[in-house]
Image 1 (cartoon, rainbow, N blue to C red):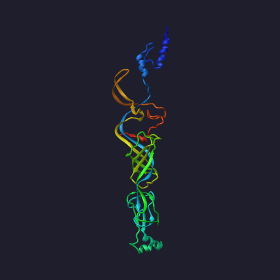
Image 2: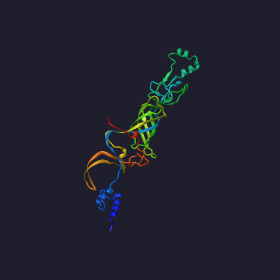
Image 3: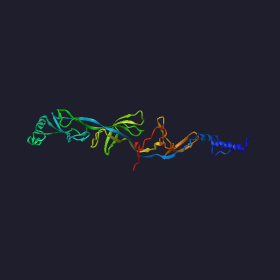
Image 4: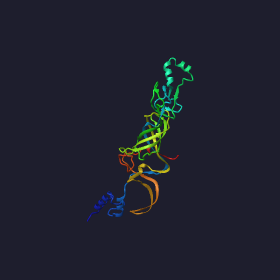
Length: 319
């Protein structure tokens, strides 16, 4: 016959393995309660909440400016370029003088008279002697200079190339969960002078297969301004999306599996047994899973992946 101390020790052992209900007394096991205890999932999370507010997502990018939508400025007649005023990457308007030139006849007369007597010749031939200004048709940035002072040119010869638009070719600098798309707008800053700001539009997006979450980007702007230089670096933020008056939950609380997303929320129950429970209400309190120290990624995201920084998915509350 088994002694009572031995039964008491066995009961303690079963309680330590979770097979005995904590309310059990020695020698009086409760099978249903023991089964429910064995199926209970133990969590050590913190509580969070679902809030209502506004949310904006941004993607940081960096790239190099190139000339886009280029047109050429041609010589209006046969003659010679006396002075080149426009320089590479200058910001120009239709009122800007790119160069000054004279006709072939006047060029020959200047050469015959010599520079020392040029002032007297201009005075004597006033009204006949004329220097013509070469002007661009539209606002832009000089992307190439094809002439030089004292160069003889023919009618229709190309003198300058002017870019009406700027194309920034680059990539996002932080891994993205939500991909950029063509047509999205972006705020662009000149890296050497952040005060120079433009608004651009995404025209092309190509995923980088070797780096998931990163994309080759093309952004176009026609907001040509001074100080902009072709071939220089531009940085900015692409507006990925925004929503107002929506329910917002911490990204860390969302579990992803098989293309679906799950959120562990507070509920109130009615009827309930060990197999099923009646849900009478869903609350706004949620559980935030406990992650290893230093790991801030959402549940369901592989360890090698990183979460977007605040700048890639910042949210703001309504005032």
